[in-house]
Length: 246
Image (cartoon, rainbow, N blue to C red; front, side, top):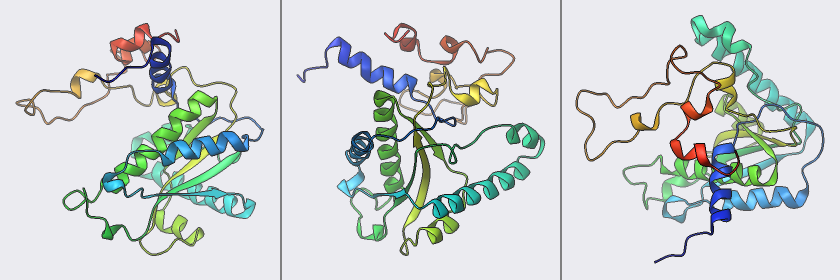
C-alpha cells in the first residue's frame, strides 16, 4: 500500500485547502521571483486530460496593457450589475478585483489547436477547461503555503482580452489572476462575509449510485436566516472543525 504523509504534512495539505481564499485586497510590495516561479511550476504540474497541458499563462508587465485589462473588467462589472436586477446595488458594493493593487497580473488561457487532442475529449471536449482549472487550483494552494494572495477575476469579455493579448485563433482566456502580498487571508470566503451566499452542505452534493429520487440534484446555499454566515463550523465539512490551524 502507498505510504501516507505523516500527520504534520497531511494537516498542512488540508490546511491549505480550507484556508485558500479568493483575495481582493492586496498591499504594496513585489512577489519574489523565486516564489512566483514556484507558483507557476505548481500550476504546470496539474493533471490534464490526455496529458495535453492546455494552459498558457501570460505575465502582464506592460502598465498600459494592465490598465486596458482593468478597463475591460470594469466594463463587464457594470454590465453584470445591470443583469442582476434587484441585486444590482448589492453587487456594486462588492469588491470584485484587486488589479490596481496586486503585484502581478497573470492571464491564464486555453491553448490554440486543442481540436487535435481527442484523448479524453472526444465526447467531453470541455475537459481541457477542467485541466486549466486544476492548474489554477494548484497555484492557489501553493500560494496559500507561500503566504501569497491570489484572486480569480472572471468578469471580462473573452474576445476583448484575446484581442488585447494578440492570442492566436482558437486560444481562449479563462482567468485574470491577481497575485500579490496581503495583510492576511479572509477568515472566511468574502462572499460569505458580505452575505452574498453561503456554502452549500456537503450532504446535498454527494449521493450514492443514482440521482436522488424526486430531486433535481441542484444544491442551494443555506438560508441566511437559518445559518449564521459567521459560524464557519456550520458551513464547512465536519473534518474542518478539528484541523490543526484552529
